[in-house]
Length: 380
Image (tube, rainbow, N blue to C red; front, side):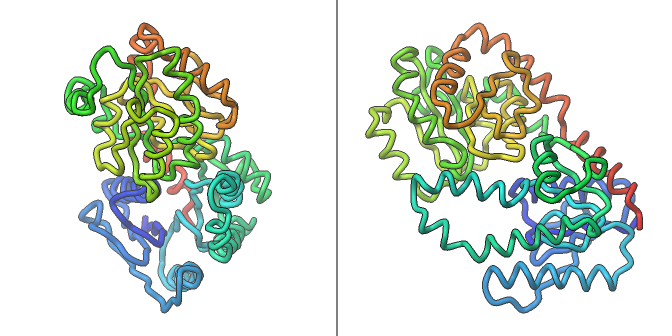
């Protein structure tokens, strides 16, 4: 089949970008003729994957989004694709995957977080968000698609409520994880080295936080409970990794609450597998994540996970077996109690194998096979 995969940005990093690369390589490996339709691109993920680069004239970010979507519409009309898969804010597709969930839901939670920082900055992107919402609505109009893919039941319910997408048109395909890259062996390899470099030894309980966009991911909530956690579990330590423009302010916040000695900020890193390998428990008290990839990465690394019900990735966890799911990021007591419960070394040790076993049910190959089945069933 001749298949088009549409996303304005093709790159080696990013959640949607990784999915795009895995899917393109998988489809090409099966013998399909795959074209990635984009505005710019990195190296091809497979020798047989082609690119269709569309760079219409655009003045600013908003116009760039609109002009690309229009260019995709013309390109699809002029090219004999048998299936078109949309991964971003376009409307010319047979299959659309909502890897980032519904944009309004993202805004609702981001706005809530922004109220604690700078609402002015959030409002500064008003026009861009309005454009994204309009493009999403057009892409989810009843005559715009044959199938919709979501990565969690949480997003499925949301897209049904917001856009009236019929349940029978939606397929849930959970995110997949690279089971070789994220593996418990790092806990006795590179992770153990990092742990030692940070001054953490075997007597410490190391909680790991990995993410970009610290506030939406709930780092402020996690830091808030750290003093109480340390009072009851003095051996507790926190490792924070991920790209964040305001890193210094977070370090200062840790100092103000007396946690400078207990929290280590690593900034952006390209080896999250090493960060998981240096820890004992993964914590993500997120305000909203359609399906945080870090959930499965941590499980695959042998770490139980404490997260919120606002993370679609929580759907792969069995409460008390693979970690804990708290109602929401603002439930301070639930977060503290979840961390205290999972500060038990015997519980952590016993759950490590279970965590890895659960992740093995969600490998990338499984995700790609499920996606391929949906795509190839939508031939024009």
